[in-house]
Amino acid sequence: MEAIMPKLLFVFFLAIMAQMVRANIGHFDEVWQQRAKEARKNALKAYHPNPENVTEHLNNHVRMALEGSNNTRRGLQGKMKNLPCRATNPIDRCWRCRKHWAADRKRLASCVLGFGRKTTGGKNGTYYMVTDSSDTDLVNPKPGTLRHAVIQPGPLWIIFGRSMMIRLSEELIVTSNKTIDARGFNIHIAHGAGITVQFVDNVIIHGLHIHDIHAGNGGMIRDSVGHVGVRTASDGDGISIFGSTNIWVDHISMSNCKDGLVDIVQGSTAITVSNCHMTNHNEVMLFGASDSYSEDSIMQITVAFNHFGKGLVQRMPRCRWGFVHVVNNDYTHWQMYAIGGSMHPTIISQGKPLYRSSKSFCQRDYKEGLRSRK
Ligand SMILES: *[C@@H]1O[C@H](CO)[C@@H](O)[C@H](O)[C@H]1NC(C)=O
Ligand SMILES: *[C@@H]1O[C@H](CO)[C@@H](O)[C@H](O)[C@H]1NC(C)=O
Ligand SMILES: *[C@@H]1O[C@H](CO)[C@@H](O)[C@H](O)[C@H]1NC(C)=O
Ligand SMILES: *[C@@H]1O[C@H](CO)[C@@H](O)[C@H](O)[C@H]1NC(C)=O
Figure 1 (tube, rainbow, N blue to C red):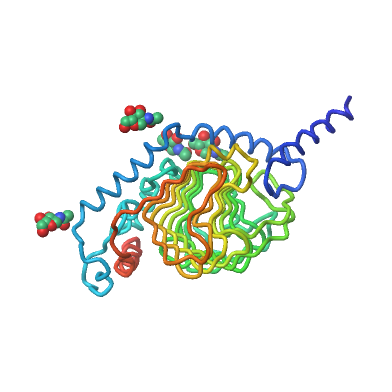
Figure 2: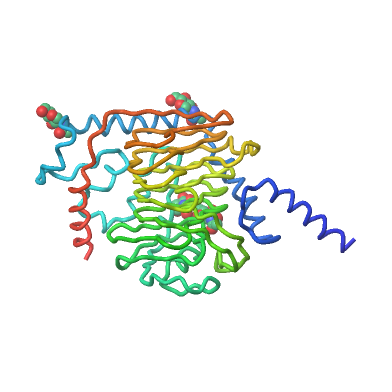
């Protein structure tokens, strides 16, 4: 009997794993099993039975943002340097032109709209400042590194002490209730592995440059203070969202990753991808990886105010099963197709007149905000 039980458990585990697309978990691992179960519960809780309410809520905010501003001269702002900062959409409008944004970083957590609108990330936690760009010890990450920050228990608002390039040796496994807030510096995650958001709840990722991401080899990686586990090779996604809930990806600039830029799979839901700038990549965003995984019907995702720029080929996004609101994105061009789907997803694709990006003005305010923090 004693010998049979573990065997049965193992078979059961294999059955679960067989359903999972590339979970990258090395072997039977009770901790991950528990996380998977918890994640499913969170997803069911976050699922909105009436998703049009959420799309309408976002559209109302877009409408209000448009009415509250009078600019009819689209495209000219870039040349008129003395105009005040203009945030062109309701998410940015919430924080971006505020002079003292850096003194009130956590305000960002109340700015998200769309399906990820309940995401608060590390709002309830303290700040953690990343000062060390290295990623040498995956089992006992060095304090001060991004890897050390993201495995801490409890909520945490992660910021950076200077501009840096972080080459991840293996995938970065982010835990629940975290914000990665790169505002104020140029933070590049590049030339290494990507970011993994697996079986977690409530994560904000903001302001990173993610590019030239390779597949990882896998190996022993610490995924929380209390747990180290074997990972198989990672795919080389920029950001992989796997069985996770309440995730907000905002202002990420991405290009040239081995697999997807942002892939959202395995029953992930309550997600907003906004204000990102994507360039030079083939398979941009995959929402649902499998025709047979009908549990992905739970997926509810907003894709808003992104700029799909030069050198993109397809999947902006490519959807299966779920409900996707694609609103006010700027598509520069695409070589194959922009938005596609199979396995009867619901895709609401909308565009409303918006102003051209006023990035140059906001960059200036970025710096002013930073100075005023001191
Ligand atoms: C959706 O919105 C309608 C009216 O705006 C409201 O009556 C209804 O309760 C909402 N449904 C859900 C599930 O929130
Ligand atoms: C929009 O323009 C009108 C008329 O020029 C002006 O009265 C109003 O204050 C302006 N609104 C905003 C938000 O700038
Ligand atoms: C944050 O704190 C508030 C108030 O104490 C609480 O209601 C909320 O559940 C907390 N959220 C998270 C994600 O920790
Ligand atoms: C995240 O925060 C919520 C609210 O405080 C809490 O219920 C939950 O257990 C936290 N998740 C983890 C994995 O710590």
